[in-house]
Image (tube, rainbow, N blue to C red; front, side, top):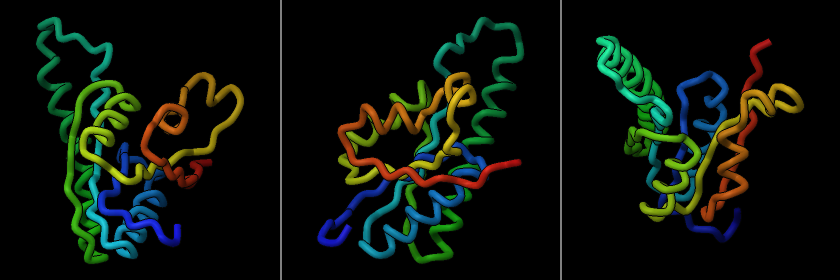
Length: 149
C-alpha cells in the first residue's frame, strides 16, 4: 500500500464480532494515511414490505438500534485511536448499497470483514463481501474475522 494516499476509507459493518478485526485494520490504515473513516451499516430492508400488521414499527426500531450500536462501536474504536469516524446508516440490499455509497461518495477503499466460509455454508448464506469484491469499482480489502466455534 506504499505510495497510495487514501483520503476516504469505508468500513462496512454488520455489528458482529467477526467484523472487529476489519474495524481494527480500517482504523490503523486511516491513522497511517490520515484518511477520514466512514462506518457504514446497511439495514437489510430489501424484500421487507410493511403491510401494517402492527409490528413493523417495532421491528424497524430494533433494526435501527442494531445499526446505531454497530456504528457506535466503530466511532468509539476510532476515537480511542484519534481517528475521526463518520457514521452512515443506509437501507436496502447490503452489497448494492455498500457499492453505491462508496462510488457516490468517492471512497478510495472499502474494508470489510468475512468469516471465510466455504462450501455449503457459503452457498446457503451467500456472502456480501464476495459480492462487493466481485462487482465493486472501488478497491476492497477483506479481513478474515474470528470464527465462532
